[in-house]
Image (cartoon, rainbow, N blue to C red):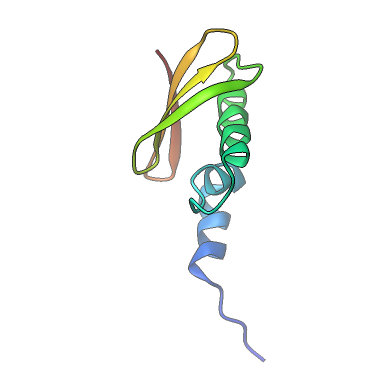
Length: 86
């Protein structure tokens, strides 16, 4: 019996769990998105104790404000995630 690997499964395998979770469907709750954004920021070596506010600038592009006053732009492009301090 053969199983078909879905596009989502291939994307998860190639792009990594963090990217897939970060830019998942908008059906996820806002708390999930905030946690995912925070995780990506921390994995890139930046400080963000908690996300106080975030906004979506475009497809796979977010502006994030942390409760310590730091601001970041989190953008995925071509399977890579870039975190830029604002």
